[in-house]
Length: 172
Image (cartoon, rainbow, N blue to C red):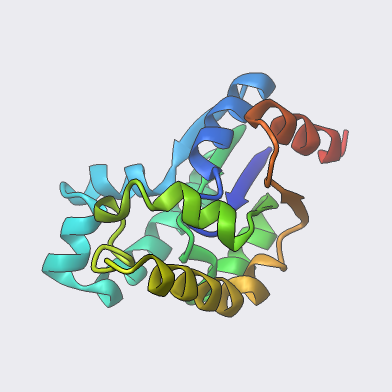
């Protein structure tokens, strides 16, 4: 079984992925960490030194490698991963996918403390412009996210509640 968690930045994909994998006794892989290990640099460094196009191409290649080679794994992917190339189609073919759906206010409240660590929003200094950016970006990506097999709202839920909801939706 391969489970892919997708959704916008700060929707909880990594923390939920780790906890879900433990609960299901599966392996866990964070795609961004996998990319950083294989590229020998952080996502931020890749963006600044090689550009977003390079990153998106490599991201798709690493996603395919994982989905073609691992089993019994929960994989958390980047917020933009399903939106490029044929990534969402490949995810649908190779795994059971869950969209962790977070509201703009939930995302904003989570990212405002770590703006410098996130390449797409690192230059935002005005909170209102950041909220506007998140809303616009989330709207643009929503069509891809909605293609996941299941949608789980994460607003005002604990990690355990989200994991339980996912576990209940996994077919036996």
